[in-house]
Length: 252
Image 1 (tube, rainbow, N blue to C red):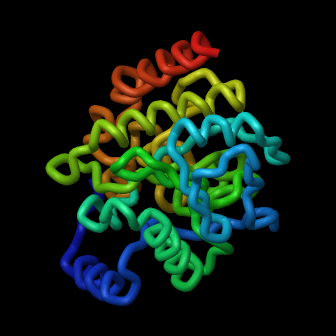
Image 2 (cartoon, one colour; image 1 turned 90 degrees about the horizontal axis):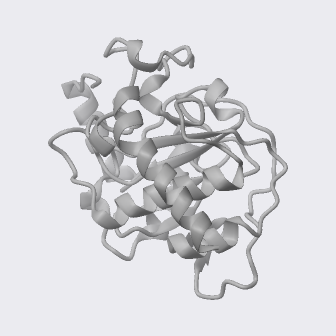
Image 3 (cartoon, one colour; image 1 turned 180 degrees about the horizontal axis):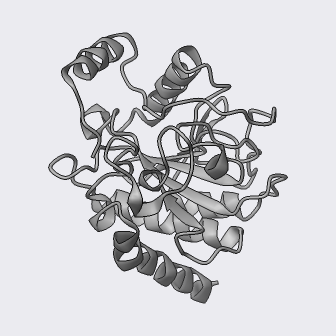
């Protein structure tokens, strides 16, 4: 886990007073200039929209995803936790406001084109399509992971002793990951579903479990589905995703 110093605490206090919620995702990388508006599915009438942001249930996302055609090659699913904002900032009805605040922070403080992540998953299990899928994500994970990646930000601080993931959010994380694997023909593995913790914070190189504590982030959290190591992913997370793929496929 990365060391958090007193100076960082003062900085966070200042930022929260200025921008009530945001996420911390490090340095910018360059991305192609694509349209900022995801293509809506006209058959979905119940979802809420605010500009490029689309609020959905996981079932609505399935319908949306399989009716989309994307120009960008996607072969990697990234998992992150926001760390801040965390569960205490979620008020059950402020999904769109939270992503708008994150976008404001990412644009005004990081200099990014729009919000960093493509998908945001909330404690109640709902999701917001955030950054258009045809735009590579931005953030400190680096250009190697971002070029052909889809970034998922899971609202919460999932380091040990912090937020305890709700069943609703857990179910949605597994479900959405399974859908993305199906859409882009990916088999769950360390090469297709990655954690931010496996990438060097400064170089953007994938180092898996070999990073020193000051070279990597704890993201998506030391207690994310049993841990943030490759072994934890193989033991606790990938099997859930594989079973969900089988379950969804069988229900078609």
